[in-house]
Length: 113
Length: 112
Image (cartoon, rainbow over all chains, first blue to last red; front, side):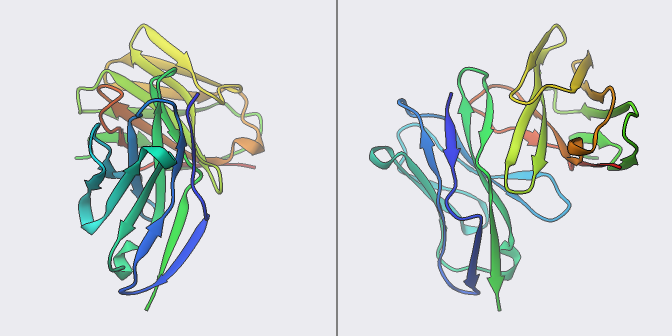
């Protein structure tokens, strides 16, 4: 079964700084990959979705993710953090056996003024 | 109105009680899912359903049961609640594996 590893349960950046949230997946074939964001007291919202063949995927709110097959990574970035980006971020891969999502453990992003 | 509605939003109950969490959707999706979220563990799959006659166990189904009453309704039951089932529970819908799932706002369940 596929799995996802998110390095760093907490990341803190200053407003205006680069955001980098790491995600590595285990799969021998290009998987379906997603990044979701969870704001306090809310459900998960889709940030972006990997599309087969793409290397750089653009999402909402200025986020993007780079797919690197050689590193089995799908790291999330944003050039300039905003206070409103403070949330928890989840990387997820489709488990082709169950045909359901397998989530990473999440990374909580803090943005300092 | 929300596309995926979960009720109740919050529930506090006692050990041994039977609890039902309900989920309804207006997305028209065939697939529905129940996850639980615990701090530091992300979301883990409890049960999922691809149609009213297709129910499948997820990775942590022990202590839970589900019912798919209609395409739009998928309920999760805890037959005899225990404190380690205290968590945030999410319902989600989807149309096929390659497409994003849509999540409800969650049910915060506390078992004393």
